[in-house]
Image (cartoon, rainbow, N blue to C red; front, side, top):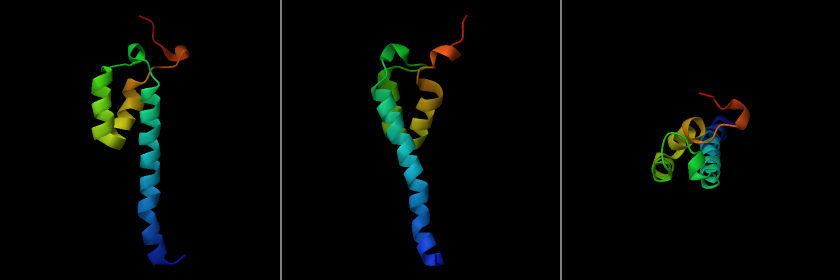
Length: 75
């Protein structure tokens, strides 16, 4: 593979995972009941996801989506 074709491919290699994370976060958000969301309400998360794109998606995955039943803290 030549240097020119590799340079043309690099932006796509960075963009595809970012779009995948954002799309997964949007789908996961849309399927989550508001009562199960952590930290913020639905409207705030929607603004963060749409305007924050990948950063908002990562924030949703880390701090917004419900924890699996086995990982919930008691107390």
